[in-house]
Length: 341
Image (tube, rainbow, N blue to C red; front, side, top):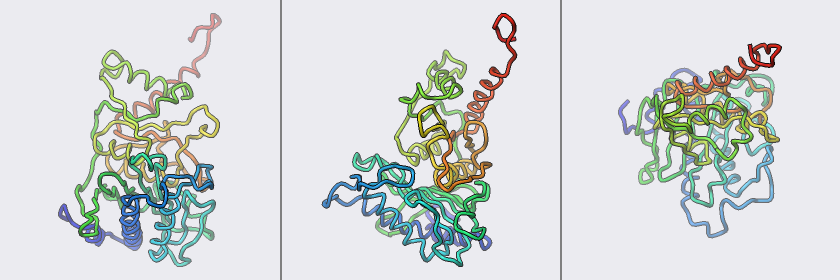
């Protein structure tokens, strides 16, 4: 299919019952994303879109006006898209949109809420799974490898869709004059070897030893074991930091750390870490929790959290070795002198 083809035209090639069902979901969300993009671009005459509503989502995060607008748009768009079980960051428990729906959707309607009022990049992240089991929750208790499709929309200078139906990653941009998403890149691949990392360095004192050792070695630059001078980037939005990695390479880390509530990581597995991991592997990269592939993890709770280390496969593997080295060091026997044997 040619570059510049519309999203609808590209998705016509989706194969199988599940592939076609996933295509319907992506098209429905694209419509919601176009509407949300228009809302974001309008002057906030009735008040700031990033203002807190006074409520909180199930994870305790303050809900903002735009969070609720995004939730309403995404949910409404999916009502007629053949979606059965539906899970959102903004809802406490999974629900069923269509009892006859053959797919389940897990979604973060608005990633990066803290960036709203500073005109930073925000986005929508989604995962499409086969609908299974007798109740709404069961469909979400399967590993990320069961995903039929995953993607994210990014609302910045352009409104962009990064998506995969399991046969590589394509990138689309919203053509506002035509009112449709057009493909701008086919078969996106994450570059290898880029000396760049994304992490919130203010949490250095809370990190586990393996993460701290890896970043400290990056900071040592050409004099350290990596032999290169590294740049650090951090936008505070998973879609923004992730998209930069997909384009330029490098590594993104949002690890577990010692703070209360961060012991198992902070990102939600089902609608943040897992779809991003699906895209990363489809683009030739990798994604782990530091040690295990994210896509091998089976969730046990709808809003379960997970650490995420994602990006160029060589760098993700190197971080895994840092975790492994720490465990090996701790396991070494200690001699009578107190020194490691």
